[in-house]
Every structure is written in C-alpha cells, then in structure tokens.
Length: 499
Image 1 (cartoon, rainbow, N blue to C red):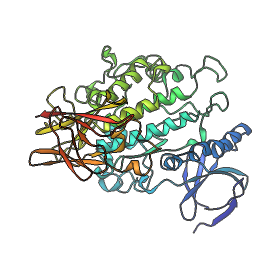
Image 2: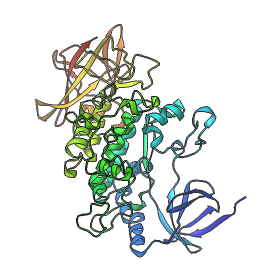
Image 3: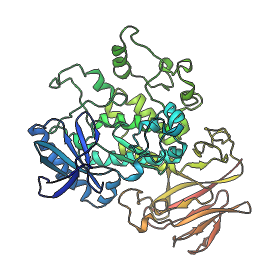
Image 4: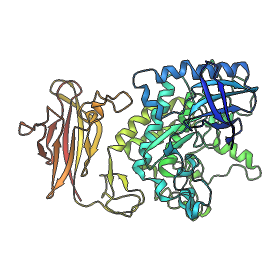
C-alpha cells in the first residue's frame, strides 16, 4: 500500500497526498488526496520565475476575481481551478479539486470495455467524432442532442467568464474540456496555462484541430517576431466554435477533401489548417467538401454534410457558424464572442422539440417550420398541433418589440422567470427564486394549456382575462398573452402549427 505524504502549501495550508502516480502527462504527474477530494500535480521540470508568478496570480487574484464575486459558486462546477501552490522534496506543484464523479466513465466502452476507459476522465474527444461514438461508446454515456446543447452552453459560459476577467485559456480543445452529455455538463480543466495579454504569454500554441489559422500560419516565426500570432482571446474563440460544431455535428469544420501538397503531409496540414483553411460547408466554395468515398462507414451519416448540414442546428447557431468559419476564419476580430454563443445556445434550447420516434438516437431536434417539420436525425415527421410562442418585450409601458426569440411548446415544457422578463438573463447571477419555473404546458384532449404557477400578471390580452396563480389558460392561434408587466415584461404571441 502506498504511503501518505503530509506537507504544506506555500500559503501554509496542511495537505496530504498518496504517494502513487494516478496520471502523467507531458508536463505534470498527478497524485490523489487520501479521500480523493483533491489532487496534487507536480511539474516534471521546475517552472521559471515568470511561470511561478503566473501561477501565483492564477491561484490567488484571478481565482478570487472569479469565485469571490456574486454568483461565484456557480463557476466551481465549470472550472477545475487550482487552489494553491506547494514545494515538496525539490518539486513544485499545484493543488486542485478532483473532477466530479460524473466526469468519469461509468460504463466504459463497447465490447466489455475494450478500450479500458471505465473510470477514466470523459475527455471531449469521445463525444466529438462520429467514428468514436459509433464504434466504442456505450450508448448510456452518449446522452442525447439536448444534452450536447446544454454542455455547449456551459462551455460557452465558462469561456465568457474567462474573457470577462481579461484572461484567455490558450489551449481550448477536447483534451482540456470534460463533458458529460448524459447530464448536459461541461468543465474546463488545465487552466494553469492561462494567458494574460501583455503580461503572461502562452506556454503552448494549442492542440492540433483547435489552433486558429493565424497561429498555424505564423508558427514558424520566432516568438519575439511581431508578425507571430500567439494564443489569445480571439484564438480561444476559434477553438470554442470548433468545439461547439464538433459536439453538435460530430465532424471537424475544416477537415475536408481538399489537398494542398501531395508530397509533403506536414506542409499540407499547415496549409489546410492555416493559410488555406476553408469551411467544409462553405456555401459558395465547395473545394473542401468532405468526400464520402474517403470516410469510414462508421462516420456516416454525420460526415455527409448534405444529410447533416450545419443548418440543422437552427437559425441562431447556423448564423454563428457562418460568422466563425466564413467571415471570421481568417479575420479574428469578426469571430463570435463567447457571449454570442451563450445567447444563441439559450435561444436554441428553447427551439428544440422531442422526436416522436422512441428509437431516435438523438431524441431532440430544432423545430424547423420553414418546411414540413421532421426530425433531421431519423426523418420522423412531426404530427399534431403545436403552439410556437413568439416573445416580445416592453421597453416602455404598453409598447412591445420582437425579441427574435421563440419558445417551442411540448408537454411538460416549462416557463421560467427569464421567459417572462427580458431583463432576467439565465446565467450564473440567477437567484434561487429565479431558477424556479413559473408555469408549464400540457396537452389534454387535443387542447394545449398553460398552467400558471408563479405569474401574478398573467393576462389573456385578447379577452382581458386575468389568469390567477393556480389557474390555466387555453392556447389559441394568434392569441396575445402578457406574462409580466413593467420594463422588460414579456408578451407572447401564439402561433399554431398543424402537421
């Protein structure tokens, strides 16, 4: 049995760790605490003075700025953030919380855990590639498409918070993000290399597949060359867009069929990911389309961009994918911000509809009312009568403007305070009261009803009928319903779809 070592952090905290390596990477060796509530990670080589100063800021001021503010507790689930530094037996290390239990594989891989991943961390790569999902993942680990949307939302929030603090991750990739799509969760790890522009430069250029084109193009230049592009906020935004695309469509947005150098594989890679990077679904330039003859059968139908186009993610995300991989691919300032992705993901979650097919692998899809509505994953058409709620909000008493936000209704769908008032954002600042639903929808006898659980101002505008808490209101086509009075108060206009 391994011995337990006792030591102190540089700020005087007593800690213990089991003298047995549980993980080893390029830079660090990791040890568990006896109760496994935290880990100690020792660097394989001693950091220089500048690196120590950066780590001191990360475990001190930067950590306090994020976790010590209003809503700070929310971030404990979205980051695995180092808490202290230590020196022991000539080695330098960090203390960090252990990953929550749900970020370790419970069921392993197919065929009696062929890959021996049971108990290992849920690196995002297992969920981001169709081939790995199809061949190796236990279906119970995969979750559904709504779970992937929610994991992406949490990831976007985490990156938004880093950028608000003036920090950049510098190496966002599916190795440094754990996700649990079965619960819709995500956690950013390896934050000890955070970049502070103008103060702490990056240690690495990033992970292949996620390095921004301008970084790839100039990677041959010395770090001190002013023409060299190094990781920063804008390169994080490229990596974030790639991650969201891969978590929702299980393919890479730039790895298509175009070849730039038949004789030099490395040069071809540099051009494909750098100077000549081209979106595989570019609407006006088909040169880099994925060639189906070149893909494995286990990558289909996801590698088929005709069968699974990026537009199936809905209007808000499709617009941002175009902005990220067309407008901003070679123009970093035009890339969508993390806040843009967060807003689009919130609106997209409100657009999803459960698939009528109980055997549908993805279970949920974005409802598209422009054609005959059907699940894009299994082809099952929608049938029945469906209310779509178009949201409007007030800037002044009695005057409402459209919010470019819709809520799809399904049995059990909930209304929350942020649906009733546009000034309430569904983010880390929500109070406990604001997290509780204020109404829900139910289909009975072919009629749709809104049940009022917490909307004191609920009013059928058409008939001037107030609906008390505990009461219910039948939904009708063209109906206007006031959810809340005052600034930011929302009005919904009901649109009935027959299919």
